[in-house]
Figure 1 (cartoon, helix red, strand yellow):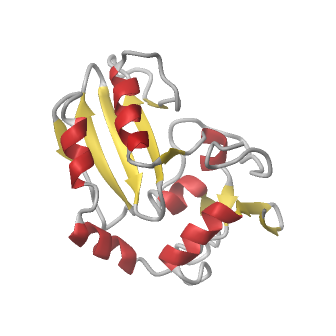
Figure 2 (tube, helix red, strand yellow):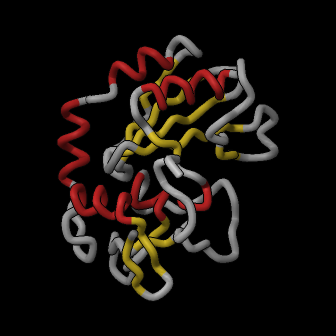
Figure 3 (spheres, rainbow, N blue to C red):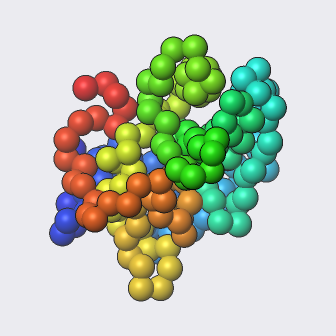
Length: 182
């Protein structure tokens, strides 16, 4: 089901992709990000997202391990497609700029730009990672003195942390399936 290291838990489905991409999690390599960026495997998805609104490619492999597309819909939507595995998150900025960034739920209201974006992303086989999984800690040594990060950081932004919700403690991932299959 996964491995425990103290309070750190990785369901084996995430662990498999983390190890395939980074190699040794105690000394991770990020060559895979450059290789993926050179291949541009998700270019077709960006064209489909453009049916929702104009799309800007905001991918930065210097600090991210995901392709990031900004969809300019009613409110800007940041679509992050992981280079590590078939995982995605969609973030939304508040129109008034006062509420900050929010994580779009996997099933937003029908007919909304968010729902159309989710439909495109999931039609291409991506799994929308639940927020409680994104906040969990995983053993990935991305820097000196930093031997664990959030799953969000491991899948999308190694030096980043969950920024849409301040959580006092990260939850354990022992419940639920990361693939939504039960």
